[in-house]
Amino acid sequence: MSRSLFGSAVAAAALACISSASAHVFLDRPEAPARSQYRAVLQVPHGCKGSPTISVRVTVPEGMVGAKPMAKPGWSIETIRRPYAKPYAGPHGTLTEGVREIVWSGGKLSADTFDEFTFSARLSDDLKPGETVHVPVEQTCETGAHRWVQIPAAGQSAHDLAEPAPALRIVEAQARAPAATSAKTSAATTIRAGDLVIERPWLRATPGGARVAGGYVRITNAGKAPDRLVGTSIPLAERGELHEMKTEAGVMKMREIEGGLVLAPGETVELKPGGNHLMFMGLKGGLSQGQSVKGTLVFEKAGTVEVVFEVGALGARSPDAGAAGKAGGGHHHH
Ligand SMILES: [Cu+2]
Image 1 (cartoon, rainbow, N blue to C red):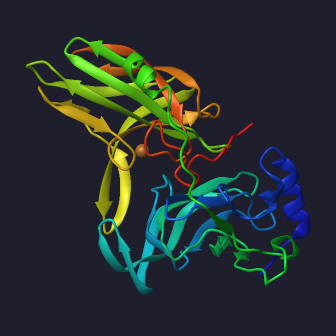
Image 2: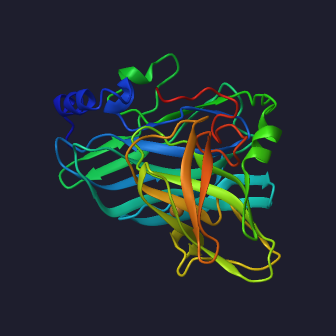
């Protein structure tokens, strides 16, 4: 195994706008409220001594339940299921086994660029506020590897370790501040376009450097004839697509909805996290919570409709919610 402190330092300097932790593989949200759904975004900031990364293997720690990787264009995903140490009661029944390892491979991440590898999991009741959970990552490069698996001993700092495992601190679930403005904004963000009622378009904030963003909206066809959502755009993105989520061999994957999304008369279609969504690719900049972004929705019959997307929190499940990994927390980029 080769490891170069010099190479790490160069990569870190090149990525000075990220964080001082960028020499290591790390979680972009290192804290999460107890019992929340956590979106683990692993930042892989460099290769191995200049050699490109070709595989990333994550061990899902005990207590992170129902793990599911996010699809990643250009990479294939393998999940390894094993029994948990104990059964976990959850909203969808008791889970006795699940995904314990996730391997992304088949891609190639050059040593002078960084990327993100994402999975989602529920933090079980066993993970108490104040605890730290470690998410070991093995990074394989064309030449060499890094094993980010070291866990600090009691009293030791992760900074003293050469290859620390990414760490997640569990914090007290916070009461969310009431969304005082939501009633007003939701009225303002309902648009009628012919027979279509378009409600509450929103985007998810993006972590630093991300080049894709998810978008969501609710559309009701109040007319008598079907229509179809066929496209979307925001000026910040090279292109917008309509995506659906499909489970293939136990892995949730997203892909483009062919022929557009059918809006049947009298029906409401909800684009939301985990389901059908808008996907904006080739972002030229980041999206921060609280921003308003002009864009369009394109319909077969109703034509191009201008909308304003509100930007919700990183990983939020809804436009009013806090970040999935940090409800009510103040995670801001810049
Ligand atoms: Cu997508």
